[in-house]
Image (cartoon, rainbow, N blue to C red; front, side, top):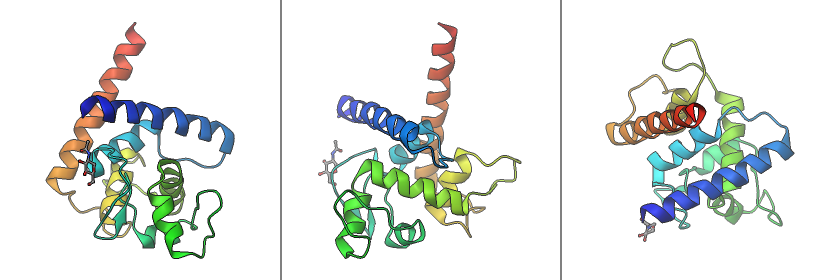
Amino acid sequence: MYTRSSLFVFLLGLTIGVIWIQAGTQQPITETCLVCMCQALSGCNDTAVCVNGACGIFRITWDQWVDSGRFTIEGDSPLTESSFTNCANDPICAANTLQSYMVKYGQDCNDDETEDCYDYGAIHYMGPFNCKADMPYSYESVFRRCLRDALRAEKRQKAN
Ligand SMILES: *[C@@H]1O[C@H](CO)[C@@H](O)[C@H](O)[C@H]1NC(C)=O
């Protein structure tokens, strides 16, 4: 289970990295941040699923999808209902949706004078107008641990 999800995260990272280089558009959320968001939200389980209307590895909602500009996977129309679930269940389309959402709503929620991953995690989970509230413990603990581990891994890599 762990190995499968690590492999997936690695592949997701690779693909998103390639897309970033190609797109050249505003991408405020780092790759590490995207991975930690999906870890906290779904364990990065890429089985196509909606939970209370929130779909895919990032548990994106219809409202977020519309607000972000209705990204679609290739061949889908932005006007079709199923395009939302198709996009939310596609890691790249879902990541692009979140990027666009944060371009629009990114802000310093925790008043630490930077707009970073903690803010994006809060905005995505609690909404742009409620992002100063405390994150639910179960979400926050996985999210923070993931970011801490990623930071350690980066430091180890630099040291080598
Ligand atoms: C992924 O999610 C599906 C659907 O919710 C579930 O059936 C499956 O057991 C999950 N896989 C893992 C590895 O947790």
